[in-house]
Image (cartoon, rainbow, N blue to C red; front, side, top):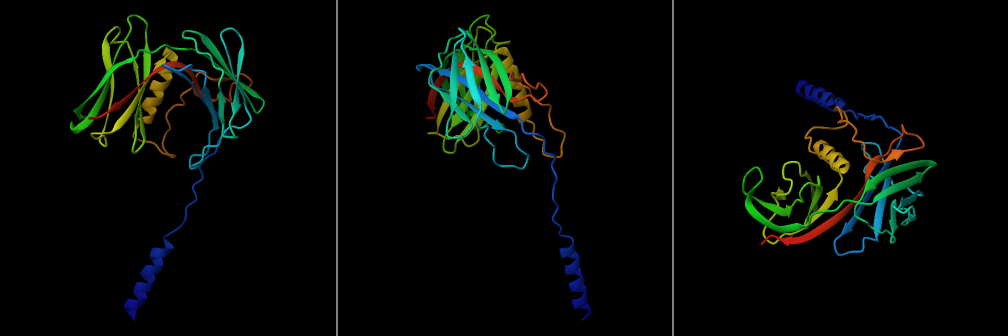
Length: 271
């Protein structure tokens, strides 16, 4: 009898320790997030472009709310205006009228909930990819497939680059940013490795030209995303500000960036 009583007490103690804790994560006022990457791929007119607008959400929200009903436009170097139109309340704003010009300055203008956002950027040229190869000696273990995209940097231009390595089955996107401070005028390579790469895998490699300020922005973002720590209760990294500004209410600045890049793409199979 005593044993049964002690067992009942023990079980009562165990279950009484299980308590649901509701975490209260502070919610801030939503801010506009601007994804305005205007890319002119080699062999295309560059007239079809898309800008994505969304809102910041609480930490534990899995859904990203779109910013609907905005007025979005880009002002051309000659002062003419290109209007973007939203697709089915998705926060995706598109146009088929963009006219890319290397070295030209463009102005992005967005009006959302009575506030005006602006950004100014120059369309950057890009160096094409010369060739691609792989070797099976990459990664920390030294036995992963490592893919290298070789390109020749022009002399004296102060170029910077964004490389995208797109894997399929399963889909994975790897980003790398580079500048020419130490490789000016030389041939070099962008690279990545992944333990899941195998013979027969297909990869698309995209190279985009970057301005100096776009490189700085993406480089800081890459440093933060590679930080192994983090979570809702740890000290968060500093906010990375882009080149978009709220001209109506400067304190309520948006997140994101306005970038214009010439782009070069190569499809590659590991074989």
